[in-house]
Amino acid sequence: MSAIIDAVARALRDLFSLRVLWVVVWPMLVAILLWLVLGVTFWSTFSGWLTQGLDAIGIQTWLAEIEPVWIANGIQLLLHLMLFVPAVMLTALVITALFGMPALIRVVAERDYPDLGRENGGGMIGSVWNAGIAIIVFIVLWVVTLPLWLIGVGVLVPFVAAAYLNQRLFRYDAIAEHASADEMQRLFKQERGGWWGLGVLTGLLQFVPLLNLLAPVIAALAFIHFGLARLARLRAV
Image (cartoon, rainbow, N blue to C red; front, side, top):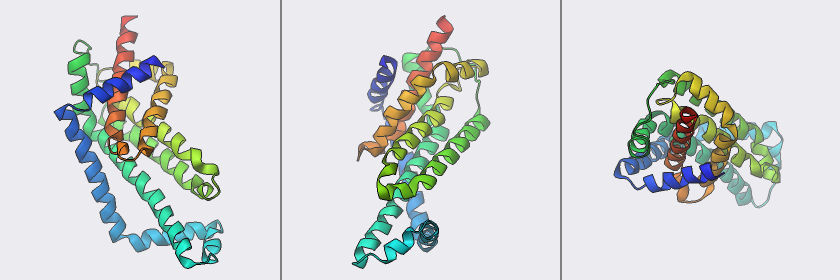
C-alpha cells in the first residue's frame, strides 16, 4: 500500500511541472470538443439509440407514463450525461495513454530514474492493442449495467470499471519503454494487486468534480512512478 501512496504523491508533485501541465490540458480539451461536436451533430441519432435501448428493457414505457413530462425528460437527459461524461473521460484517458505518455515518462525518468536502462519491451502496436481491449471491456461494463442505475444496484459499477480501465490502460505504457517483454509480463503478474490498487485510487479521482479534469495525467504519472519503481526493484534482486 505504501508503494501505491508513494506513486500518487510523486505524481501530484510532478503535476505542476510546465511540461506536465501541457499534457494535462490538451487531451481533455480534445476529448471535450470531440464529444461536443459529435453530440450536437448526432443528437437525434444518439437519442434514438438510447430510446431503443430503454424500450428493449421496458424502461421507455415506464418513462412515457411518468407525469409531469418534465420529470421523464429530466431522467432521459441524465442518462445522456451518464453516457457523455464517461465517453469524455475514456477519450481523454486513451489520448493521454497513447500520445501523452512519452512526454510524461521522460519527465519521471529524467528526475527519478536516470540510470534505469531502456529495453523497449513494448511498442505502439502493443499499446494500441492494449488500449483496444481496455476500451471494449469498459464500454461493455457501462452499457450492460446502465439499467441498474435506475434501481441503485449499479452504483458501484462505474468505480469498478474505472479501476479496470486505469490499471489495464496505463500499466502497459508505464513500463513499455524501460522493461523487456519478459520483465513486463513478470511485473504484470507479480504486481497485480498493486496495479489494481492504483487503478482503484486513481479511478476514484474521475468522480471528483474539477479534480477529474486532472485525473488522466495524475493516473498516468502515478502508474509510471509505480511501474518504474517496481522495475528498478526487480532488477536489483
